[in-house]
Length: 71
Image (cartoon, rainbow, N blue to C red; front, top):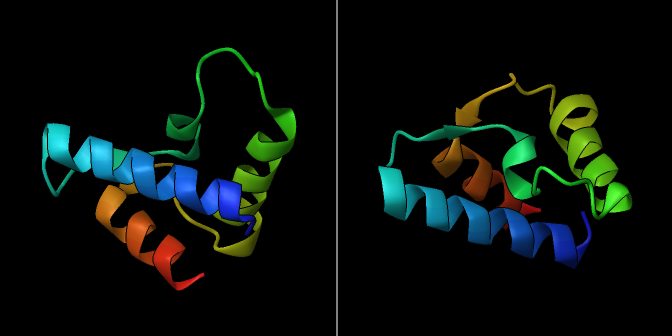
């Protein structure tokens, strides 16, 4: 995982948790705007989420943050 993706995941998870609480779920799309402005980073996130870790479409933000911190 690149530092750029790791930092983005942690920041978005922190934001979602602070807004909606510890049980908030998200998908890897949460790390990107509706406009695909960084396809390389989007594919990296999708690969990490789907191929590497075989996660469900929605996972708890706290789980994703913990996983990113150990990468």
